[in-house]
Length: 588
Ligand code: ADP
Ligand code: MG
Image 1: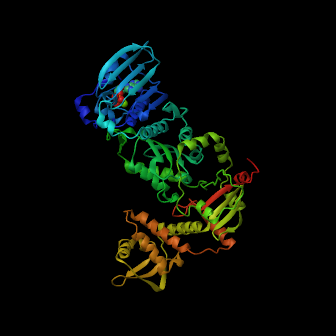
Image 2: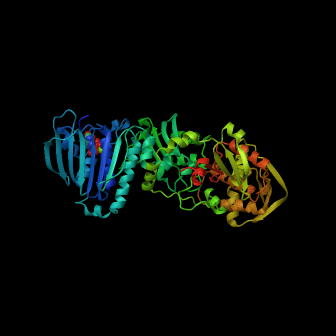
């Protein structure tokens, strides 16, 4: 399509955009243009956080000599002709305002050449005013050099953060663009240093490796599925690489990097049973949706879209992620860090920490050091996946050996060439929870009547917690009666959990709901009360004969997700024989 200026009506209906608010936005718009131009190699170079220099070079279609000037006119685009075209638009850009906006606030130079042209063009424009337009010899494709951004708008310049922070934003957008288009080779250079590159071989996994390094890449599961509302392919992180914030939840719609609260929630909800609170998953998911079902024209920076079939889409994403997590080997593999310390015993506290008892498994995230490890171990990924022993396999059920128990809590098991440590409490809690929920989901709550009943004297907050959720309690098998004022009688408890029949444990359950101020769905609350009940039920039960431990493990292994207790803590961890041998210096 030739470049043309859109008519006023179309312009007015396109969400008006203050597209350029920081250097990152320039980089995003120019990369999008390069992608739209069909480039398969894009080089991004910045200095001073993009404030003094942004250079973006692509090997795409280039711009025809006669269109060069027009490309910088406001609302000039080659991508749509009229508003209706937006319904089918497959390009990332469509408003025709980026080049005009960038040129208005910087000193810009562009070199461009199409394949068929004998010569290319050089175009210089500063503060929106054309300075030069000449013929020049240059390679096919387009190079933009944007210097001194906001030099003529000091107010905007003042609002920029430090160069380092701005460079961080740019790095993040380049990473997302690279993840969204694995078929394009990206190279990112900051202050004349190559920060990262991708090969453009089309493999999402390779891009993940180039950006996030070995620790993440060796812990991802492929996801490939066709659903009613979309097709999804990509990777999701095993729960062991959970993160402290949402910035690792990547998803792309039709090659477009966007943010969507509802998609994010669907992914998080699927991970919920596998994750501790305040931990977030890692994902890179490419979604393909019929363009007619999305409205891409709702946000100035095109960072949000509206879905017409939002509900179905979210359900499909939720199911796709959950199906990928189920029935998988997800035992966290413990790799001892290299240290100067010679042989020593792990303390009780250290073992507890391995099981996240303290809820403090901080994942410090240092991309550079990750990349170092990445370079060091490339070789390991294949080996690990090849030799992974699946503790859930029927073979494992036969061959697994229980070695014994330590600290009255952790069972030591041996299978294949790995040693597994199982947290008895977490395992027990999980098994109880699954049995319990199965019954509830089949609508067969069983109640055990208490004689005499437990009598509780409750505070206002506790009363409220009970009154507001009485139906949920009943659904779980509780019988609760108010017999005047603040006195409540618990006359029945879930039959599955006889050991919770103490006032102390009942109050603990009621208190944790009273503490819960966030509005959550009744389904989620039901799950929470069930979780608390199971936790209370296993409290203080340490003694378990080996035969019973074996039964417990068997039941645990038969579950869809045996790896996490209902609170998301791991139930088991694994240390490979190889890792031990390395530790004892039998191998290096
Ligand atoms: P939009 O991308 O919304 O069309 P822009 O202002 O970003 O608007 O770009 C205007 C036009 O300039 C595009 O429609 C395209 O025809 C052309 N253009 C911009 N960047 C490139 C590029 N890197 N390669 C080829 N053509 C480009
Ligand atoms: Mg554009």
